[in-house]
Length: 298
Image 1 (tube, one colour):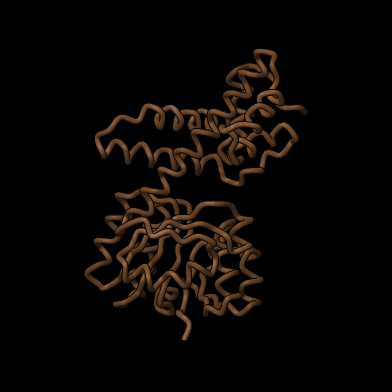
Image 2: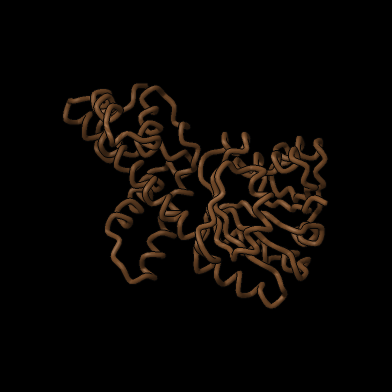
């Protein structure tokens, strides 16, 4: 019998994940929090809707949570009619959000006496790959729990990496996003410098596109010059949050992170300039204001 799956967080990423779980035969129970339109096709395909997170837990063997960050995860688990209210021994809760490792540890320790496993399995790639069932995930779990949840993860992931014991997944995800957002911030600044120096970002892109520096993040940032500010569908404020989590991580490790701190402040500045609700490529628009130069054609 297929594992009964619960899902909380039918957003840009969560919709595709849930869609693939239903399509591949997993009985799915979900709670619709805000946007009902994103869940209608899931309900039409056979998913069951319940009114509370507690009922999601009660009707599931594995519950996937895909929300913004640690405060939202804590609310889902411990809030009014939260997962812990409907949890029973043997339930596995899988946090696919990008969360703070210290929060992940606290949740895990609080659920453990009730026999509930709390696993971190954050994601990479975009909503497009979520719809296609081609996400990547990095899982922090013991070997037995990983083996139990792997079939469900493979319903919406192309690559499933077991990166270590509980907590390891969120650490690796923050490292991944630190590198990715550093490239994004550096690309936006380079476009501003190239424009102000009179070289032109198109020439810079030609050179980078032919060499070892080329990568998907840079190319997504460069698409701003063709008017595409959504080539990287990751909210700028979410990236700011992830960079904050990364600097908290390094602070807890008692190690300096001058690059992480600088990149974090790039996102803080862009958010303060009004681009927080935009996608990460709007770092280029923020650079226009900061550098006092027109970069993008309009």
